[in-house]
Amino acid sequence: MKCLAAGLLVTLALALAAPAAAAERDPVRIGFFSPLTGNWAQPGRDLTDGFMLFWGEVGNRVAGRRVEVIIEDDEGLPATSLNKVRRLVEQAKVHTVAGGIPSASGYAVAPYVEQQKVPTIYPVSSPDDITQRRPVRWVVRTDFAASQPTHPLGDYAYRVLGLRRVAVISMDFSLGWESAGGFQRVFEEMGGRVVQRIWTPLNAQDYGPYLASLRKDVDGVFALYTGGLAQRFLKQWTEFGFKAKVPLLGPGTLTDENLLPSLGDEPLGVITALNYSAVLDTPANKKFSAAFEKQHGRATSLFSMCGYTAARFYYEAIKAIKGNVEDREKLLQALRTVELKNDPRGPLKLDDLGNPDQNIYIRKVERVGGKLQNTVIYTYPMVSQFWKYEREDYLKQPLYDRNYPPCRFCE
Image 1: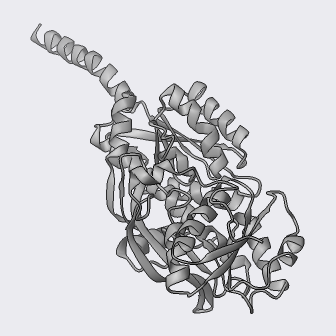
Image 2 (image 1 turned 180 degrees about the horizontal axis):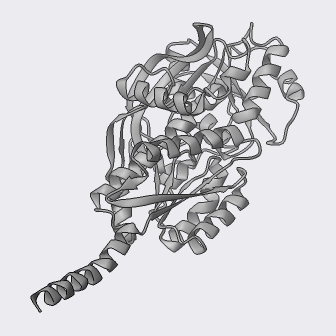
Image 3 (image 1 turned 180 degrees about the vertical axis):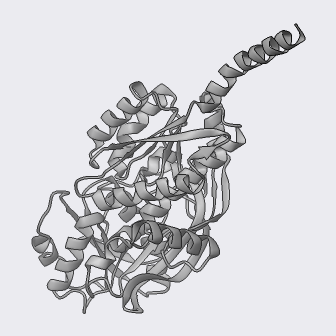
């Protein structure tokens, strides 16, 4: 009878433990949307590979729970981004979503995740107003606001490069407008002049007509292009003879590391501003770069770093709430309180609107050891999305767009 009683107790204990064990085995489901086809395909692959690299390093587990990442290709198209996020939330029943690259995708997805109260990370998508005039409570951005790197670039262009008359040529969409607007505002407040702005269609295959219309009396050109469009622009910039005559500068996507292996001397000397360089000489970046190159056979980039950082944000937040991702409010608040002191990019800390204060690096393309790289030549430490402006005053001004700031010196 004693043996029977002991057996019954063991059986009862196992029965009572079964639901708990089953709950522990239930995975944390993260929906991840990224362009894996189209013009944004290479940045999208980098973003996805960086995200998955981190989870591989921690055994695809956090706080005692397995992590399941469900990946959707959004082609870099805003409508597709929204449809894929809907599918992830409503059909795949994910606990949280992350992803997106173009700013337009960020703007498209934001109202839905806000309405559904889905904790969301934007690892790259950088529309200013997501964390400024129209903050989205359920979105945390771990990259940067579009104008955040270009405010310092305007300062550097005037103060260090000595530029005084600059033309702007850029893709005709929100990232281009906001990036150019940040540059123009600071550059002109210091005494410089933007004397021309050219907005090129997103489907432009030939930049010849636009380059031919660039003014000849400028001492610098600010350009914003990304992915395959940046590659095409740099080649045509060189073919038209501008490379030897006019300094070229812009946000870091213009010379992102995933483009450099496919280029010759075209990007040499180009000055860009970004929160990352693959050759940052820090232990965290060396470790990340070595791991990424070993696994994927290519150098790190802004996009792979952003994917890696976003995954780490999840890890730290989920660990802090002991895996309770079903409590969306707790997960959101945990994401908003993550602070990283040893990220591959350097230190970062979110402000109360969900955007990181972080270093912005001025970089120059050089050839070192036979390879092109973005050498860091100056660092602006812990830059806010509001630059050096008072936040309240900054938010009273209109969002940078196609017509703001006005081109007062254009003729």
